[in-house]
Amino acid sequence: MNQPFKYAGSKKLKFILVLLLTTAAITGQAQQKQPRFHVVALYENGGHHVEYTNVARPWLEKLAADSNFSIDFIQNTDLVDSAFLSKYQLFIQLDYPPYAWKDKAVKAFEDYITKGRGGWIGFHHATLLGEFDGYPMWNWFSKFMGDIVYKNYIPTFARAKVNVEDPTHPVMKGVPTSFMVEKEEWYTYNKSPRPNVHVLASVDESTYTPNSDIKMGDHPVVWTNPNVAARNVYIFMGHSPVLFNSEVYKTIFTNAIFWAAGR
Image (cartoon, rainbow, N blue to C red; front, side):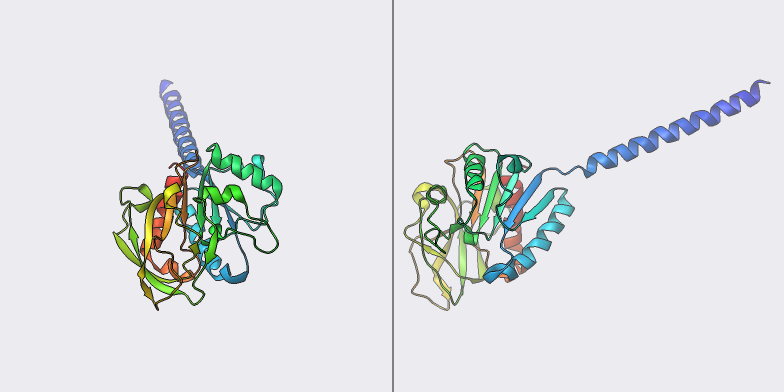
């Protein structure tokens, strides 16, 4: 009489054990799928930089999927305010200028950076500082970028060598001491930002190919501003999609994401 009872109990116990293990596996998978952090990328979807964007966006989406973080894309600052930014640990200014921002976005972004509410990475067009398209210069942003004003650029593009100045910085992990950038406009400014920022890399203007008279001497191209609470890095190179053919460029970009996001 006891044997059937034991047999049924054994089957029931096995069923419960399988159920518990399945539930634990599902819970573990769900926990693993939770993003490590959240990123928002502001980008231009037209004009001279659309080709760069068309390569950068899918590259970022794949990196996010492979590295388990989330990324949202916006094409203007209409939605940006303090509540919006509170959802993100990293703000990427992907080839978007520092003008034509909504007033609420300007205030929220300044607070986000000065109080360290999240990290920031800016590319290329982020230093187009001055009076453009009828908009005044954003003075706070100019200070943030090292108290500089945009002056000129090489419209015909040039190849050049970039020298790493701080190989110990996390953004430069795995980056050689120097590397070539095949095609870039190379902005110049009214002065070097060096006295007001920490320079990570600079371009050697003597290596411009073809040569150009549009030079500024001391010419930083990657830097971070330690005078604000937010982790931040500006990477000048960001016009041509051929940049994504470079493993070095992709390494710098990837390093910047995880460092600025605090991960």
